[in-house]
Amino acid sequence: MQQQKSKKILIYFFLLILFGSINNIKINNLKLYHINDINIIGLDIKEKSILLQKIKNLNLDNIFLINRSDLINEIELNSLVEKFLIFKRYPSSLFIKIEKTKFLARINNNGKIFLIGSNGKLTQNDFSYSNLPFIFGNPDINDFLNFKKIIDESKISYDEIKNLYFFSSKRWDLELRNNKIIKLSKNYSQETLKLISEFLYDNDFRDISVIDARIKNQIILND
Image 1 (cartoon, rainbow, N blue to C red):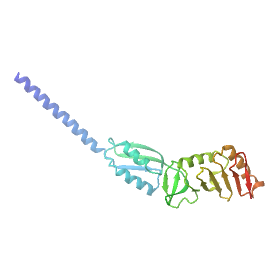
Image 2 (image 1 turned 135 degrees about the vertical axis):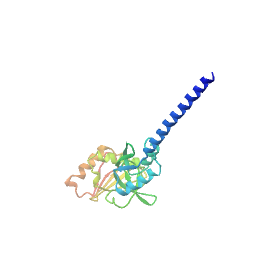
Image 3 (image 1 turned 90 degrees about the vertical axis):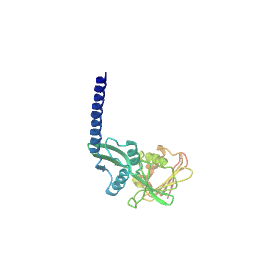
Image 4 (image 1 turned 180 degrees about the vertical axis):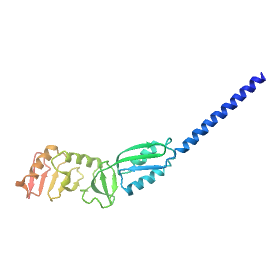
């Protein structure tokens, strides 16, 4: 009986050493997969540097143990990012491919000038996008994005717009680069925009300075 107990103790001792060694090997192997390289594609040098530092602050030590939700949240917080993909390249590299948002307009927000991105986020203006239309007023960003989409589906070119005016009644005026003004009602439609474009691009009406479509089923032209 004593001999059997001794054999069991030896077996348990052997198993303890065996599994302990395996665990140590696994731990040592994990240490080999420390993230040494983070590559960000799609941003310029300055933008990349800012995002890279924020990602490094997450302390992503091991490629197998990345907290993916923290990493995704940090990238999504960046106002320049429209879409992104994350790739792991084993054993120690991380690649982040970014599709940068497209800036659509400028707007004054609490005394500072911001750029509105196609992702619906605001980025502080560095004065390198002065060619973008300026929005006067305080529209909801989603309202502006919906308005921009409707304009894009019409024959009026968004690139021709110099300024956009948003009123508390939730209607828009457009000032074009040729100084013509288009006044829209709150309930404008694609049919309204179609009628406006017919006057806008007709040489017989090239001297018209204001196209007023605020009254339903009427277009009023002013010199």
